[in-house]
Image 1 (cartoon, rainbow, N blue to C red):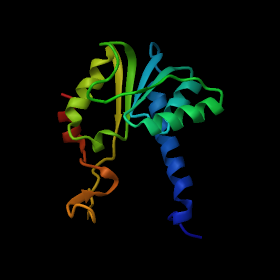
Image 2 (tube, one colour):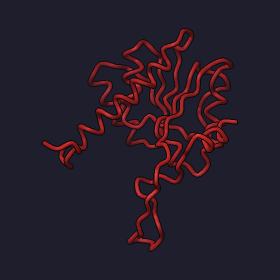
Image 3 (spheres, helix red, strand yellow):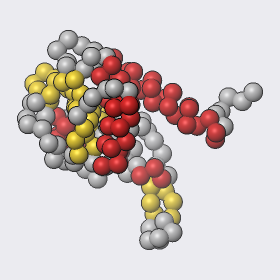
Image 4 (tube, rainbow, N blue to C red):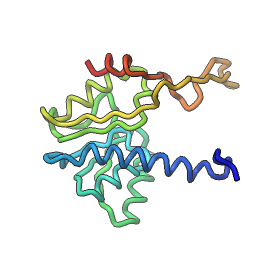
Length: 172
């Protein structure tokens, strides 16, 4: 027996880890008055699905057409109809104060300007609503040398590592 997952188990291990994170986020959004949610950087749509199953009205937003296409098709196969929109986190396609809550799960570490993204995410949430951000904590950013451009490139495309202080500065 081994404690660490072997490479062939990583898909299942990662999925279980993500499910726990999504359940925690969904729990935060379970408060009264939170019905309309924007899942910003929705990726594969797993969190979107969980929120819909818990009775929330969700719009999935992602910059990647492929992500939206796959998430939408997967949810349709489950007979879950969710609007997905192509959108840039720096210019979200929503009016001011138009949602009760917005989630950005594991995406701000990828952004050139996370503070501008958080300001834009906050813009679309009504006064008294919720903004939920999750990101790796105190991550050691590893870099590799790109064989194409001969430049240092961050592994996993993570540009930032956050701790309590840097997260507090982002949300001031």
